[in-house]
Image (cartoon, rainbow, N blue to C red; front, side, top):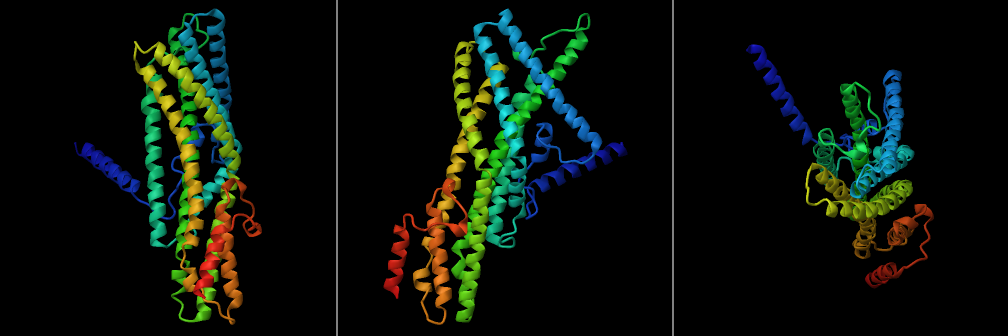
Length: 408
């Protein structure tokens, strides 16, 4: 009895420690929660140098090619032999196209995985204003949003996709052959076949999660840059001397511009992945909504677990389209808000021209003009920050200059 109590006590302590760690955050916390295990199961990347596990993982990837071959064979038999009704045949097309699109998107992520690693290091680094309480709170909230979304999506994978797939009979997932006089072997092979297919479900969820994490991480660092720009004068005004004010102001602007420039470079790094992902997702989701709606309308009389799975997949694809569209818009909004923040600074009152510090005065004005003009440009048109052309729409900047002239 004592042993059981000891084990129970240890289990409770472990659960309590896991629960406490779930709500912990520090500047070294992993922003891309669960990415390593998803990349491992999803056959994207294995972060290990051990030869043994690496070989098994590569064998696992090769086995998935065979699994897709079996799915194609099954689909061919269903079409040629005509064993399925038209509605179920449409359903098979839906499943096969979903697997194909998921694999294509996983290949895109695998192709850009090195660049994704750079974004991951950038978001996890949190070097800029690392000890600042306000910035810490911005990053803490973003971290828990990502963590909660990850838990919800992975729970959805287990509850609605993985577990039911082992219990229901899906024609598209049947083996195209049977083992004569060995029903138990056929049964075991069938379950292994389904388990392998379920790893594609991990890819499906990983595709959603990684794009969400990248966009949300970039949005968070954009908010940090916006916060830094908003306080450049407050930090400079703490200096007692006029020379200290100008030196501090220029240094703070340089730091903010450098951070903004780094953010724009990271966004440009992900542009190809975002554009290709959006194209594939948009057209495939449109196709799947049409095919899924046809299947659901045709089979609505017999509502079962499989139909619930179908609805779940379609809803997840719609949510993913929303995430891509909405979070890309938010990223543009954060970028533009930096220009609005700089535009709203109290620089007409705080920047008083003097002959002694005319060089510093002109440098600060140039940085303000450059930042505002830069933020007026769409993200897709961004180039090198310090080589930016300020000859575009300068209406807002002219208003600032006129305002400053009135105060002088």
